[in-house]
Each structure stands twice: as structure tokens, then as C-alpha cells.
Image 1 (cartoon, helix red, strand yellow):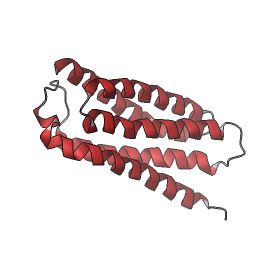
Image 2 (cartoon, helix red, strand yellow; image 1 turned 90 degrees about the vertical axis):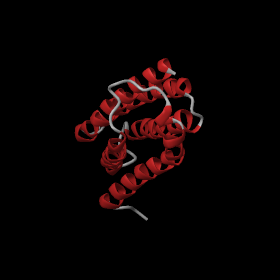
Image 3 (cartoon, one colour; image 1 turned 60 degrees about the vertical axis):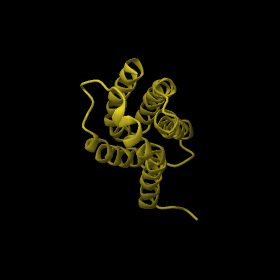
Image 4 (cartoon, one colour; image 1 turned 180 degrees about the vertical axis):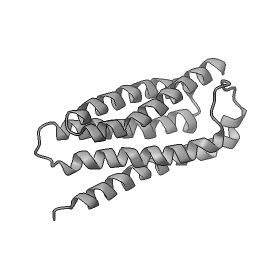
Length: 158
């Protein structure tokens, strides 16, 4: 069965949102018991902002992946670009486990550095195929850049 372009977009968006839900399994329990009591830098965004931002970012990630998937599996560069995307989404979920689940800012920092590089590689791969898809990932890279700095400061302050 061949999936239409709208089905591919919906599956991609729902898949990314599901990754966010999976990450929240580790994040939510740690917020009140650990994260709220550790030392954080003064530039930490308010807690209420994280949920809506991540929901929007996962939707943009899904839309970007869907736009590339629509191009077809046989087009040169599609598979490596989508593989880079899959790696970065796995690293995203892993970060939640390491930072919040294990409550280990150092492991989280090592992961988020790798995540940042994987997002950058995904953007490069997507740009060669769909400039629109690549640009949809830029807000994600910017937010992860802030998260990387927060993670670094949390590690240093605690």
C-alpha cells in the first residue's frame, strides 16, 4: 500500500509528538522532585514555557521529516537524511532519560552535544533535498542550543 503525502505528513508529525511523550515519561516525574530544587542559571526560561515550545518543535520536526519522506525513498540523499533525522530524534529522547531519568547533567550534556551535531547534520541533509524542510528545523536547533547552555550551567552549578 502506498501512502499519500498527507498520510506521510500526519505519520511523521504524530511520530515526533510520540517521541516527545516518551521523553516526558522521564521528565515529568523529575520536575517536582529534582529539577525544581537544583541550582539553575538566571537565564532559565519559566517552567510553563517548555511544554508548549516542545509540542510546537516536535510538530515542526515531523513536518520537516514528512516533507522529505514525500520526495520518495529512491531519490538520492533521502535515506541518509532520514537516518540522520532518526538518530537525532533518538538522541532527543535519550537526553530526557539521561538528564531527568538518571538525574545526571553530565551524561545529559554529553548527549545534547551529540544531539546538536546530529540536528545540524540533519539540517544539512534536508537542505540538499528540501530547503523548506531544513528551515523548519532551525527553531529546534536554536532551542537545543539554549538547552545545551542550560545543561552546561546545571552541570557546573550542581
